[in-house]
Image (tube, rainbow, N blue to C red; front, side, top):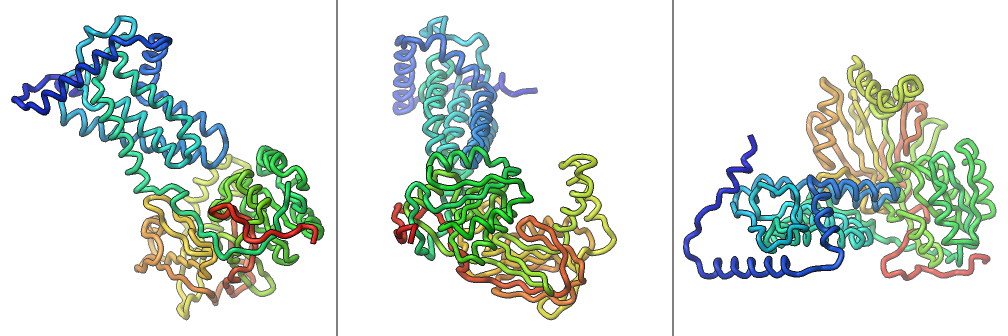
Length: 508
């Protein structure tokens, strides 16, 4: 039931001197390309053109980029595929149905170049060129380095469509323009990380460490950090690196902080939380190398890999960031990212209970079903003088912003605010949680509310209630107090312009 055959029926245009002149020029360029012989192109370009059918080439390129295991490469691959998808949808639903241009005649094209299976859709615009341009542009918007690597391949695919005789040059140019436009449209909906880098303020006076001298880096081997640690050692050969099992991380961090000019940590958010607490107690700056799955703090800070962190350490570039603190009876702790009560800690507890028996993903699904179908609300507390049942209370260390359709992230780690979100108790918890997630910050409704405060007290919390902070789970001892420690932690991060805030002898 495809309309492609019908779409090839040409319309008979009326007289139009400008249009006809453009079409004659288009035909002459097409014939010039057909008459030109490029060494090595005859066996290569037709294969490349076929390989790009249905986006196969670009899915393979995205998979290759994802194998690189760098966050920027994975984001670039995802953005490239999202841009390709939007371009393909636009071309197939609007482009080829609007301008029903027939394919060029194959007479001038040597037989060796012609594709064995000729396309039957209309010619304008080129879907292959649109996909190639969309993927390459999307990748480049997220990672210029990967974009430069992909661009020659995208250009070759676009050229192959004229070289094999299946498109006029104007078809390819229009398709490429539409593809690039799709990539920018995706960026409008989901901005790139570079568009929302945390501001490099307030700048902190931190020592410069030539070749890493004075840095003691503790790495959690359970996080799969070996490749990142090796990259850091290559960049900073005089740094001391200690790789240890998760159970040994706190003790090794304590020992490292006693002799280090700068305490370094490589691991997930829980490991970074432990290092931050020790750095605060010892009064030493912290250097964070992302080594976990999510790495929220490092990425929001603007540190993505060993190269960027090494540059900041050698140049002496750092900032002050806020720290969140919670207190419940004799229990206290800090959080760099988030604190939560209610559904999330319950989900984690249920997932851990079942994961060893049925596996991680099935355990997560089962945990969600069990918690959301429970007859009781997971939490009751008095918030701002009013006691009520709650499905979830979330507090972020800094305001979380929604970027287009993307999940929220912070763009300022020193704003002095706790970003508090509450999902009220009631029927249909799954719907309430979903509506709160979609609504974003600063909302107020019968189902959920949000507010930014510097301090929050929760009364009437039952002892033993589960709480989560930076992915770690523990139990309350009753009433809770959350507060901000403004600009309490000194951390290294690359500064715009590459000028260190303060250069000092690390041995002083």
